[in-house]
Image 1 (cartoon, helix red, strand yellow):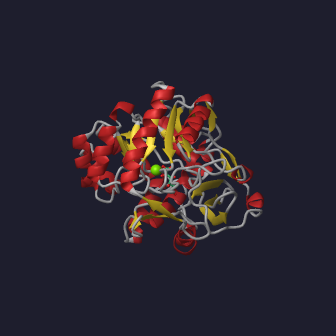
Image 2 (cartoon, rainbow, N blue to C red; image 1 turned 180 degrees about the horizontal axis):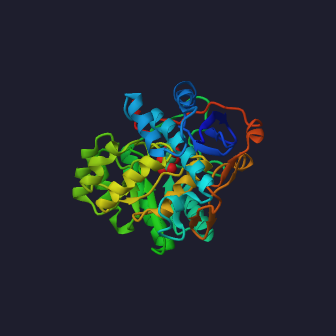
Image 3 (cartoon, rainbow, N blue to C red; image 1 turned 90 degrees about the vertical axis):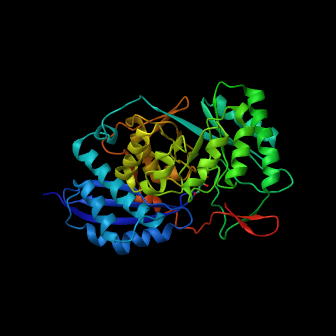
Length: 402
Ligand code: GCO
Ligand code: MG
């Protein structure tokens, strides 16, 4: 029997930090999984190295579901981002291996294509409305059919969602950057730039906006109602989702579609949101929600309730999980959209292969498995650098949801 012979964890910062798991079998086959949890990377690396990897040696890499149950139920402690990201890395690596052994791209193992490619959205941003409009123009000329729009709120100085370098990167400082937040200023300003985007570019593309958990349910209801004429594809994370019931109120007041779930890690965290049809798109991901095995379970539940997929795809999801996401996206019947921000240039020196972009869509690799190779020698040129996500503070100094 082929067994798992070796499992290694790599932590490197090619432009930003990624944690990567490599599993090698007794036949010499190699599978990769992403284990990146932005700003808390070493906790997952330790969970893997100190607690999961000792359990893998000698196990059958073909028993993916059994491995998932063993790692999840065997931990006794349930859910949570560190556990679910670590399990995801093992799960993803085993799917990669299964594809390589079968000689098939992973989407074939998931039932084959339901579509040729996946609709993606990218991030347009600006320090003011004029800069945002230029950026939207740039993405539309690159062929994007869906664009997220964010601009800094004037006179407040918060910069959530505003790109400084080539790609938007929120985890950019050695200690958390403390950024000001003023809800009323945001509520007064954000609808005006969304209207300006529609006024200038019309309705021939999808427009998205991320509220980033910053409103109360009632504020979110008011915002959603106000931007209805902009016909958003979605408003994202209108309110923190730990309290799933909170979305009922938003739902009662607006027809603006709702997406949430990028910080949620299990099917139980989205159960009420899905079964009560409180959201339109579920944003859980391969890397933070237990791997392909568990994410497919979430997507299947969502399909029963007419909820579509809209997975997180920020820079902190490594090329390995972006590839896994696209394999699942092409296969599931209820795909909605995939976020695609790209990565810093240095990441391409370390991760080779993966999905390809053309005309607003991503297409999965046709290589066996996930089609991404991790270059260990190149990774050594990019030692780990600690970076934190920012923290938001209201104008009175108290901490707000970032
Ligand atoms: C998004 C996001 C991200 C997150 C980041 C956290 O892409 O919708 O909200 O920018 O803030 O991925 O790690
Ligand atoms: Mg978001």
